[in-house]
Length: 415
Image 1 (cartoon, rainbow, N blue to C red):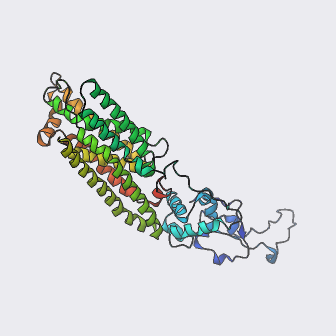
Image 2 (image 1 turned 60 degrees about the horizontal axis):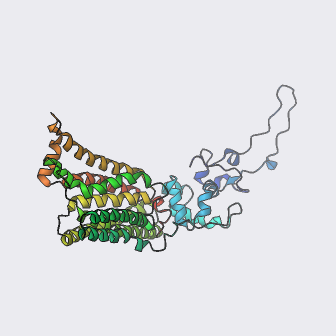
């Protein structure tokens, strides 16, 4: 706020200095001293005995005041011009550090009230543009994103059927084609609608996400075989958790849409940033619980249909982690998800590495932590602890970041 410039702004003549708001005192960074203070008296010539006549007080320029809201609009000109409603301006101001306390200096009770005045004045101020472009949306995001969300689960189910009813070389081909189809379907689903991430934001997390999904499919069996001195040939695959995670893409997209839609409504109803933040916390936790409940139901269903253990705890923790990571990335907070996903992937790789490294002479102690955990709770406890810890950290981070109005400044592509 201290960097606002008043160059080129209109000035108000005929204003008494006593009527200036507190926000426009000479010591305020929003005020320009030459616009507030009276002019210095005309200097006299020194040493020559000749003095210029003093300026007539009646002819001296009157004190002039600058419109503080106009100064703020000049500083955030681009935000005001592209805003399609006052909520966009309020969220943008909050992102730049403007609080309700700051708004009080502009004679407004909160940032929302200040944003409403700024939005109303954009079209009538002569030096402000009257043409506002609509907020850009994701290409194709409004059409069919709910259908695309069903693609990963549908393709994964088709791949599972192909693997179950084939053998030998056709079975390997069905598995490879199914994995490729699921990957393409997953990309199509998350690149549209409310989970669409900004360009390039999700690229850094893609490698770690692929590792975590691969571990959900292969990791538990490999870890159990490694602890028993193997693997001796192929180890069992965890098909049910992988199928449930693919099917859970649809509830994740729909929950993200619900969160965005409700957040926009709360922005409309709230009269302050603190009020909005408090109202968003139960909404975030409720949406997260809804997705987690849907994921657990899908894990149970897939395990029953395929008649195999699902590893519910580990797969549920992974699903929660992936959901929170993508949700934060879609709202422009990509750094924390990358850190959480990388930490979880490296921790799982470390668990596998210590098991196989313990076979080296004198290194049997390396496998003691993993052996203790797996003997107590089973192989699925490793991804459950790792992904669960990372998901909890992201959940705390989510309740702090997505409660800001600026996180919902631009509507998601599907909302």
